[in-house]
Image 1 (cartoon, rainbow, N blue to C red):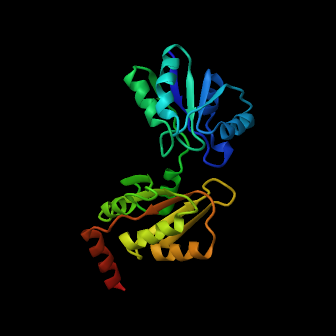
Image 2: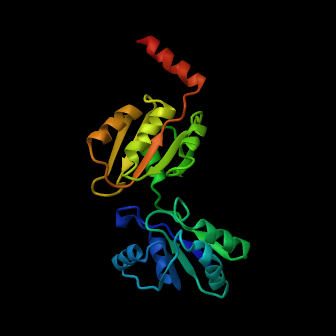
Image 3: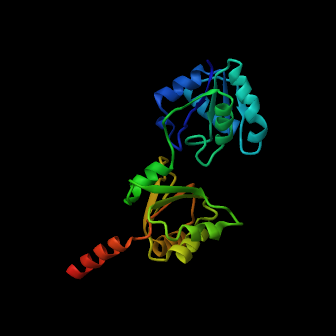
Length: 238
């Protein structure tokens, strides 16, 4: 039986693709790409020639049923996004849901995604966290942040270089200027950087240094009463 394969692709360094991902991309009949130009570059790097078709947020509602039927007819299809794991702040969910509803087998390969290295690199608790992805650009943005004001788990957000300063200003307003956070940009690339500190400190950094690249913002959860007491006890020992 043919399958839909979800294949993670590197978020920066092309050597981060897995051997199994390469094998699947070589074996399928068709590759669906968020941007065929970006995927063509990766396939040339890997020495792979396969038919490519677009599957992105602007056409996924119209094409999900068609591609599900294509797989049901016996053709293996791989879905890739521009970077990382399809479905994580990228197209993929609708096609997977359609395939599941139609009884088409889906197999997801493990691989790169920006949120996990940024989370682990932050130094904040990783055992429990919530991933928020991109916040709404306008309507509902502050309401969503306000709903997270009491969140005690580590929080992870994606942001663009054009909105990162405004985003941090809003974090200062909602979470407090002294809330610890970690901002990673250009993960796995030549100019990879992680800036840690309070919201105010990191905001000052990016006001002074032009933001470039794709950003992952990791925010410490609101301290619990127990944690606050532990901090106060440690301060008292000094």
